[in-house]
Length: 92
Length: 387
Image (cartoon, rainbow over all chains, first blue to last red):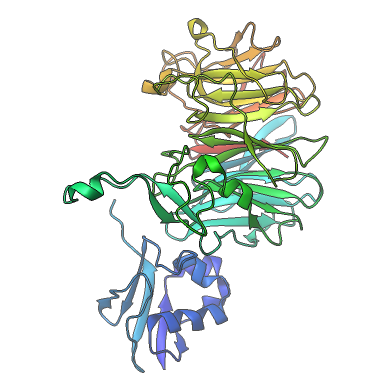
């Protein structure tokens, strides 16, 4: 089972995410996001737009690597992957 | 009496307590709030949020602001597209450089304005150029397809390329892409099937059948930035609203001046007085009873967009724009560079309030004759509504 950790910023709007990391059964990032949506309805629309693309100012890492596919979130996830979902540092 | 204030960093209430108007943070701390308003039928408070990272969200409070939660979310349906000018591309070949507007998938960039019709009817104006309506008190919202597919923006783009021509341009108020937006929704209180919407930068459109059909309502409008000043489309209303008791009196603060319509927006006439500074600005408010009485907060030209000579004033007409008075009593008359956004001026009975980009909030209890400074260190103010 992969684990998903989300920025605490999201816990404010989606209390069901509190107490993560969550464990999910997923082979891609998209599947992991769908699993988290089940736990915290509305989660997907916070991190993706209505076409399913990752929002500009959101980052997802699998392990140490930032995902490559921001359109379909098809990056692979392993059984022991740690998925981090956070607000992107957009400069300032 | 209470003013609901949307700011760049949260929702504030301005309430009169012990004879004094006092501001307080009332929700959405740290979140951009483009618009806050109260549904007069249910008392539910609605807020249009713009999260920096997490997109635009609709929020509501069922307990008068004690708590807020996400409402049903507004999303463009699959296949919703709009025409946009192609991005400049130095590597483009000659053929593609001649291409006209390109089709873009619509995703929600901004929730801009909220309006209430008959019981259960809530309308939300968005960027890119959407009117979303609910007929069940906000449980579900649907994109108005007749307006989305209007011939002025290229026709039905769900099923094909449409005409390939759009007369709807963009607004820098969009967050991200340069796209057109609906910032004004004016519902006729006598018949909520009659509505006006105003679009930056296209113009005003009206429906008289509950949104099934729409037509442009820009006769008499003049612009000063297109080859044809009287073009049917391409006008830049900044805000449009009507008189509650006399809805045929419609007012428009436009990029190119102040316009008034005595006939429900069928015809417009320019009522600017540039020599008095009454020309450029964003908001306009109309008296609830007298359609010939209106207030503006003028700014200095589209090139500067500040107060005129560092002095903040409100302009009032009582004769449909034939003449204007400067109202300055209680407003700063030196070193004031406040800008007032389109939704940040409101009135209710003899009360008026406006908020500025520099976090100042001014309120009048005598129809603008005198003003109180109610708050001076709020975040930049996006909207003020009584409710």
